Amino acid sequence: MFAIIQTGGKQYKVSPDSTIRVEKLDAEVGSEVKLDCVLADFDGDVRVGDKAKKVTVKAEIVKHGKDKKIVIFKYKPKKRVRTKMGHRQPYTELKIVSIG
Image (spheres, rainbow, N blue to C red):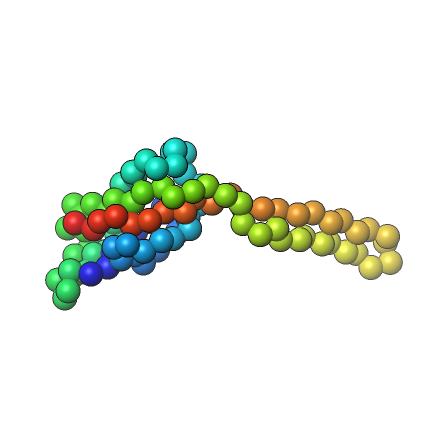
């Protein structure tokens, strides 16, 4: 059994008791959230479209955090232009409780 969910403009394949990292959600740690289902597979019974929207995927928020820092370095030769920036993407770690 698995489902494909959509959150933060991206899609993720999940199964019960799995953990995933998604874009940061505005909810507290320990709370339960419902996610939009795009496709659901119940051991060969595939549900897509309107039938998949009826499937509920419940997840528990484990923690919030920031990813590793990535370095953005821009360089223009012969112009003495060097720009260095960094970015850390915030995320939310979810544990899938149930699909049904």
